[in-house]
Picture 1 (cartoon, rainbow, N blue to C red):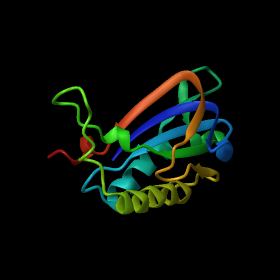
Picture 2 (tube, rainbow, N blue to C red; picture 1 turned 180 degrees about the horizontal axis):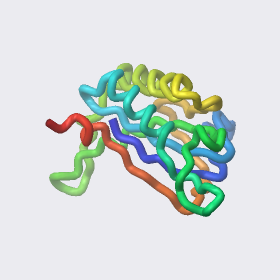
Picture 3 (tube, rainbow, N blue to C red; picture 1 turned 30 degrees about the vertical axis):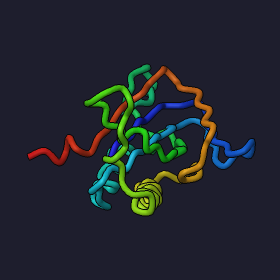
Length: 152
């Protein structure tokens, strides 16, 4: 499972001109679900994101988590994060999970964020053509891949 976490002042997602999800201060999370990803990985990733300390404290240091500031999260499904670009110039997406499984784990991941104490978790529309507006704050952008915790 791969995620791009962007600290935002605000973020929204719309489909056909209609806003489907929006948040204020917090994170925009782009989530890619890979073949073989599990609920345990979704749980781990959600926990790491909830505890990630990239918000400034009173001394201007990135020392606070989204839980500490009462922030919000917009999660967007993003199968292109699963791109394999080893050969040629056209990415292959065969490493992405089948749509039904990806959608299930995407929903489960969002539930895990809520379980970890995030009070507002908004989503896009799975498999839709979406317009995402992001006011990246900092900019602070972190990439997470659950493979780093799975290596033996």
